Amino acid sequence: MEAVEVLTPEVGTKPACAAVGISRARVYRLRARRKIPQAVPRKRPSPPRALKAEERQQVLEVLHSEKFVDKAPQEVYAALLDGGQYVCSIRTMYRLLEANQEVKERRNQLRHPSYSKPELLATAPNQVWSWDITKLLGPVKWTYFYLYVILDIFSRYVVGWMIASQEARVLAQKLIQETVEKQNIQPGQLTIHADRGPSMKSKPVALLLSDLGVTKTHSRPHTSDDNPYSEAQFKTLKYRPDFPERFGSLEDARAFCQDFFSWYNTEHHHSGIGLMTPHAVHYGLAKEVFKAREKVLLAAYETHPERFVRKIPVPLALPQAAWINPPKPAMENENLLH
Image 1 (cartoon, helix red, strand yellow):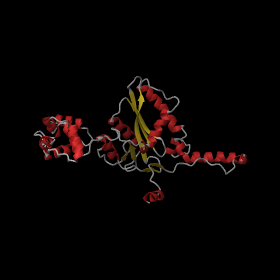
Image 2 (tube, rainbow, N blue to C red):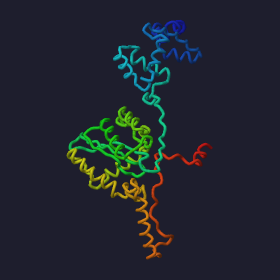
Image 3 (cartoon, rainbow, N blue to C red):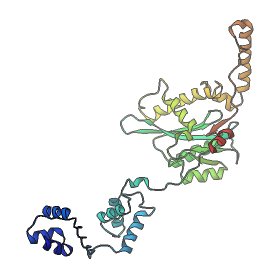
Image 4 (cartoon, rainbow, N blue to C red):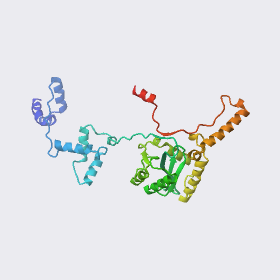
C-alpha cells in the first residue's frame, strides 16, 4: 500500500496499482478507512499540437464575428476552407465554444437589426397605397401566376393590378408608374406601403418612387399585421365561391381577375367603409349614396315607427380615417409606464 502511495503522485493511481499488483478498489477502500487524502494527479502538459492562448482567442473571434455568429462549427469550417483559410478542426471549435458555455442553438445568436413599426394614416383617397404580390396556382403542380395588386387603404379601391408568369422588379416598376400616372398623383402626395419582398425592396422600384416623389414604407419582417389591407383583399379574392383551385392558363387567370376587380371596385359593399363600394368612396360619391340611404331609412321609420324601438335608423357612418398600426391612446401608454 505504501508503495502505491509513493508511486501515485508520479504516475497516477491506476499505473501504481498495476505496478504493485493491487486492485484500485482495495486502495480506495483502505484510503477511506485511514482517511488518507487522495493524491493530486499531476497536471498533464499541453500536447504540442494544442492551440496557444492567442490562437484560441483568434478562433473565438471568428466564431463570434457577424458572418459566423449564428452558424454551426461545421458551416464555419467549410466556409473558411472555401475561402482558403484553416484555423482549427471542427472538434476544436466545439471544445472552445463549450469552454465558453456557448454550445447551444447558435442560429438564435445573430443580432438582427431592429425595425420600427409603421404607423400610417389616410384621411382621403390617394394618400396611402398598399401593394403586394400573391401566387395563383397554375395548371400543373409547381406552376404559378403572380398577381400584383395596388390598393388604396382609405377607399379600399384597387387602383392598379397586373398578372404575370413571374415575379420581377421591372413588372412592379411598370405597374406602379402606370398607376401613379392614371391616378394623377403629385409629388409629395402619396405613401406606398409594402412588405419586404424582393420586388418591394428592389433598387429599381426605390429609384422610381424617389423620382415620382412618393414615400415608401415597409412592414416589419414576418409581420402580416403591418400590411392588413392587402392581406384582407387577397382573402376576399381567394374565398370567392367561384375562385378556381387552379387556373388553366395565364389568360384564364387574367380574365378571372378582370371580372373580380370590376365587381370588387364597383359592386362589393365593403364592411370597412360603411357598406359603400370602393368606387363610391374613392371618387367622392359616398356622401350622395349616404343621403339616399338616409331618406330610405327615414321613410321606413315614418311608415312603421313601432318597428324601430330605440331611434330613427341611420346608415352606417362613412369612413373618416384608415390606419396601419394606429398609435396607442395616451392613457394606455401612461398605464404601461406605471
